[in-house]
Length: 129
Image 1 (cartoon, helix red, strand yellow):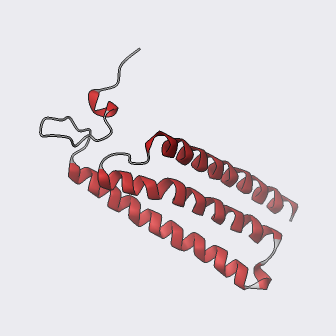
Image 2 (image 1 turned 90 degrees about the horizontal axis):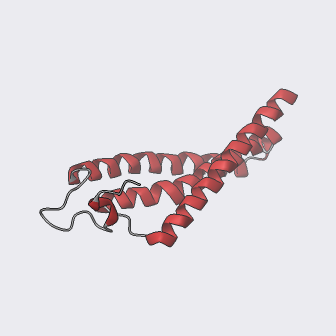
């Protein structure tokens, strides 16, 4: 069984001048900024879909409920998966520990499966029309 490189076993990879890093500090910041742009966009657009559907009664139809379900699930993925990734990349190490990692993985998997099921139901509704 191959062992992990030393920098993967530490909680912080920016310990000292001689430590090995998989990506330069500027790379972490660039990745964090790029992910922040996509995360903010996802939150704004998904929240807009939810709010507009809730405010207008004529949009409350079965096909639109599938769309709202997709927006809620995608919002859950963004808030539980993308936002912690932005913070992790900005800091250069994972700060939430083992329990946080397990919870993040569970939430992203749960919302991801919800997206898949919602998409499947949306296709089934379209087939019935």
